[in-house]
Length: 192
Image (cartoon, rainbow, N blue to C red; front, side, top):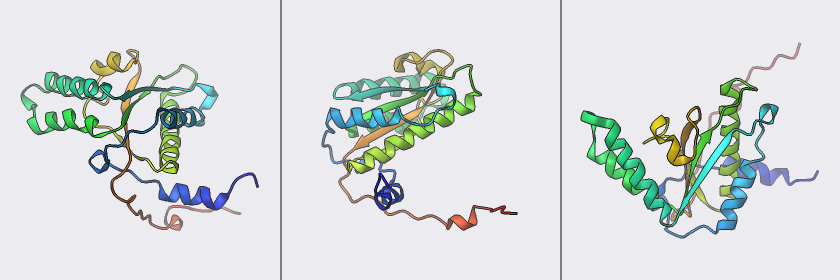
């Protein structure tokens, strides 16, 4: 075998979401972020549409992201404005080393859902690569996610969709332990 299957199995089982408030403030090397994105680029994609679109925020870019999303939320929320939500949107990116916006640019070659599924596979590759480097990560879909008014800020076209953000940083705590119900509860075998 070309790969250590036990290590791959362990990596998959130890992948966890680690939230920005759990990051220690250490900055991730740019080369590691580039490798995370390179591995995202190798996700399966039907008809090779490669529909993922990413914008990386770091340094002062994190503050630009925080301000943009908080102000857009304020503009769009009208009488439903919630100061706590606004404050959270202003804070969360600044707790990270890097934030990567996740977009899908649908093609006309496959149903849109297949392009969205391809992006989800790309994000899984990002999660696994981040975990292999000891980096905490979290795919969040709150705030301005799905808001067409946000598209241009993230370099997305009108028919593209912002699917959320990949928050990254080194954890100040151990990676959380996970649990799953047995796979046998979720699989039916048809053998005859």
